[in-house]
Image 1 (cartoon, rainbow, N blue to C red):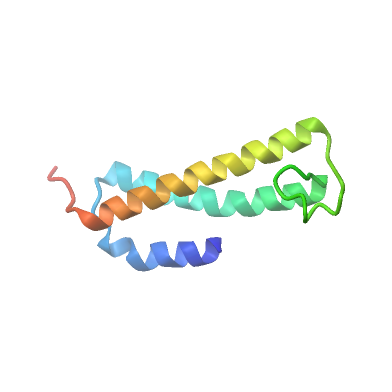
Image 2: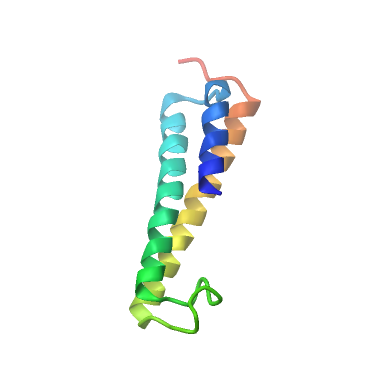
Length: 99
């Protein structure tokens, strides 16, 4: 799903009208969200954590620090994707500020 989201962002990127700094934030949060989601999914599989995906864990549970690390990682992914989507949608609806 992250690949499809990045494809949608790429297709709409030329239509995004944001200040350069805000556009950079949208860009980097989208990339962070997509790639770190992959990384935390792999980490969760390696550590065998269960708090975020109990069905996929196969009944195994990681140490508390491992569970907390993966949960915090996925929470940061969620925040990053929400920020990126909100900024992208905001940029699609208004013109760039004059500088």
